[in-house]
Length: 79
Image (cartoon, rainbow, N blue to C red; front, side, top):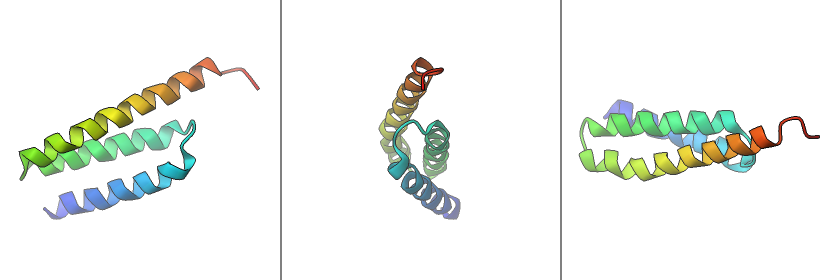
């Protein structure tokens, strides 16, 4: 339970850092996704429901990461 709490705090801090820098900041998005997955895995040890409740958020952040990567890739080489 303590590890899960620390992971939640870390996940919230990464989320706070990422939010103001929303556009095309791929590395924090990947860090946020890793923090979400780590938190979900830690939750699974004592609550299957908490694990599954984190999955839609993980999928959304994964999708946002893919969109940011594609925007970056399509605009590579443009001023």
